[in-house]
Image 1: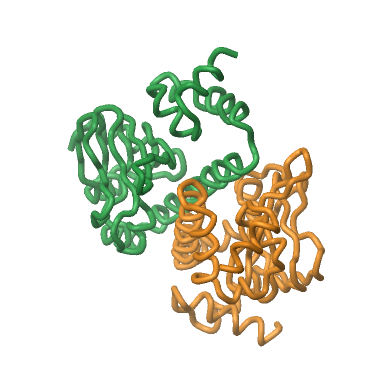
Image 2: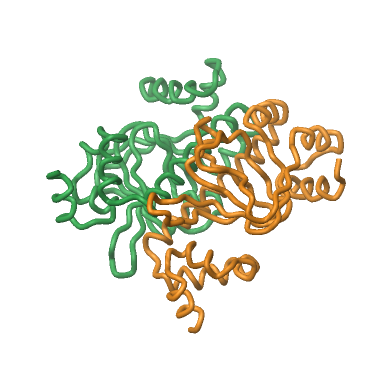
Length: 192
Length: 192
């Protein structure tokens, strides 16, 4: 067991639930370590998606590609976020989106079967995952509403003020793709 | 206990979990019946949101209003769906969206505190709510991706083919608002 990663993960779980040493050790044994380099894929369109992942360190992007090649960024995933193609994962379908690494990344993966066993064995893990799922839903609802009703200026300002660290780490091209604007429009926004 | 509504709700729960009569009776006692007429509000912007609701019968719409008065429909809620302003509900904040009734509606409400008690008492209810939350997340991800990358024609066709009943029940004005197009554009789509 890599003690530094285990400790980080335990702190993450214990933000919401309390665990004994034995419980944590057992829970941790359900997860598999995965390391990817910048530009490598975690999920590619058409893949089976058997795992969801907790981001130990690194930065990833979740996106769909239009037939004409245009990239639409659904969301980013940095430290402490959970990422997967959840549609494919929960419904055992093929991936319709891609997830790749913007930085070298270290992840902890949990398979759908292990997730079910874990929930049956530890009701508090179900409570943890429910809380995480609820928060994920809220984040997605915010993103959808903001796409529908906010101006690009407002969405740009929100990205800077709510995610200043992420904003610093992201290449400008990806910020533009996330906001759905051209690189030129983004430069104009940045100058204000 | 209204036996017809209780039976409907039990069937809904038992799609995912098994319950004894005593368990169901106890679980059902956490829920409050709410009846609303067409045009009445379940949630209004600025309200405290203390409940989530299961739709027994009826049809509701969840939407945000821009400063200029323009309505953006996040989603509809018909029989067997769960609705709330989940951002406000989970984070005990004021509502930023509205939910009102397109048809007379009957709902079963569950408060945040009762939800917590229920999850502690019945781990299988946590499993039920986790599964529902996961599916809700998937539906929202689909809606967001479709908004980002699909043409209006494609989104119109998907609405008809995936939700034929809903399509029949919705006034054309609301279908147009859901797709983010004018009433004229919608007529043009309908003629193809």
